[in-house]
Image (cartoon, rainbow, N blue to C red; front, side, top):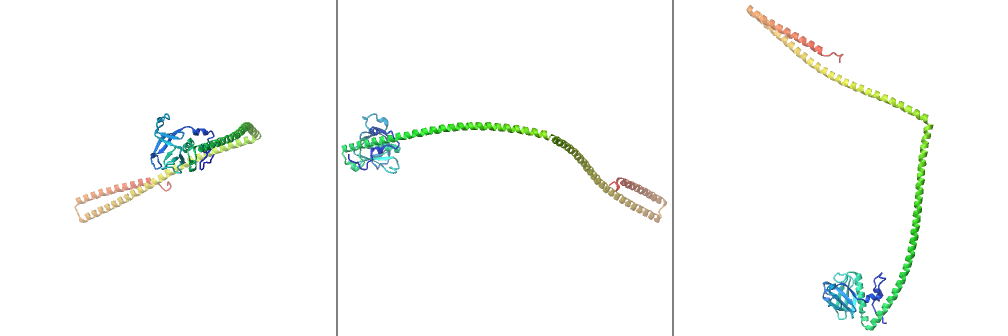
Length: 363
């Protein structure tokens, strides 16, 4: 059959990793949601979500899946695919909408559709290409319907052979996977054996550790008993020395307490002596002040006596009568008696002061 330039074979239309894909399923009726650019041209700006149904070389769309109950229902629109060319819209899509593709005709009319995912877009483009072997380039458009049919059948046969090769490769991979799983099971078994041996070794180690600990304790007790027996005399002597040292320390402590008590008593006596000394100084000052006051009174008494004697002399010189002289004399005698009493009181006061003032030896 003649070659179709710039047209991918049908085997390349399967999604990667779809090992169970069937070429015949591409020829079955396909249904699903697609977004259609409003106006039916590439210059539209509004997207409308419609329910599309692909059957043979006819692509119908409805407003919702409820509107399609069979092929006798009237669709909202129809796109003929017999002379249609399907292509991707390129990077960026239309108006920033991704996963878009275009169905264009030789007359210039075109329909822009958009899917939700890249996988849906590829599947719809595969279904459109295989529905009625729609042309995808100018050279294929020049072929007849029989030539396009032969080319499609050849592509289907090649896809079937490639699928067989893929299945053989898949069988090889399954075999390698089985070997890897077998190796993995062997490794797991070896791991379990190693873990079991490790547990046994740990149990032995713990038992040996317990035995060593018990032996260490036994040896420690035996050593202590041996030391006690060998050094018993020295231990008793050391204990006696410690007891005597404790007794001496207790006696020293008692002496220290007694000395501390005596020191406290001495401090108390010293404070009392200082208080008595201060009190004696105050009394001495008070006696000195009283003595000065007595001297002042004595001097005043002497002055009064001198004045009295002077007045008596003046009266005698004046030659007053005997009566007035006797009266004057009586007054002088009274004054002298008062002076004597004041002198006696002053001497008594001085005697009291001397008794109250302590001597230098008492200080």
